[in-house]
Image 1 (cartoon, rainbow, N blue to C red):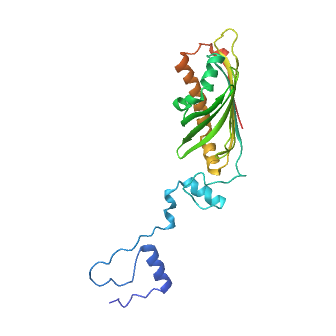
Image 2 (cartoon, rainbow, N blue to C red):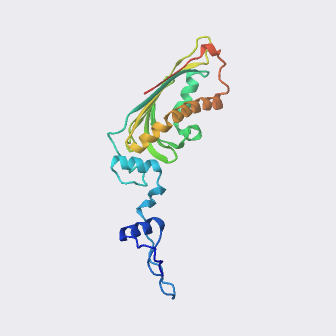
Image 3 (tube, rainbow, N blue to C red):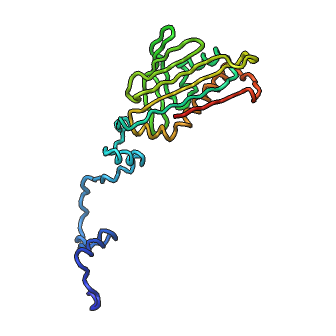
Amino acid sequence: MASAGARRLPAGTRAAARGCCGLSTRRAPPPGPPRPLGPMRFPISCSFFLPRAVQVLATESGLPPSRSFMGFAAPFTNKRKAYSERRIMGYSMQEMYEVVANVQEYREFVPWCKKSLVVSSRKGHLKAQLEVGFPPVVERYTSAVSMVKPHMVKAVCTDGKLFNHLETIWRFSPGIPAYPRTCTVDFSISFEFRSLLHSQLATIFFDEVVKKNVAAFERRAATKFGPETAVPREMMFHEVHQA
């Protein structure tokens, strides 16, 4: 029995209190055998299982959240990124060319390369299927590679499923005249993803991915050909350009 001083809350206030505090004015059901449970329903809020970045990007783009990264396509909003690097390496042109041109072995030493399979080749040209990625993105694409021994290796993405544009170029030229087993390496990469999500991830990880890849080729040369030529520090140079 309610006390004389207690006042009855308005209906709207009672409903709000029940919603916020979990209070209920419903009477408890009479005792009896338990009723079988019906099918469970999961609210839309279960999308918290998706990465937060996907939800934010999807909301901003007016697209429903999706578990498929490739399905999150938002062309015309990406920006092409470019990176170039020039440096002296303590290996010959021929040695560095052999490391870069051996696409079949990329899966053994290139970071985030899960698969590298040469599917066709002829003199100066080859086509390879690559599987690359780092969580949460792992994708496959086809690369057409052209080579001019021992001066240049150029790779272009041809299938267009993942990239609007992807091109990498390695150029090798003579190094320091007094050190024959050196060369000048010019590396450049430019790319543009079809997916807005991939583009955002690339912006976050771009520096780390590119720098680790270039360093991986230098380590591979050390594995195949031994220690690099020792060159005085004052004769070395390393230039990086990014856009």
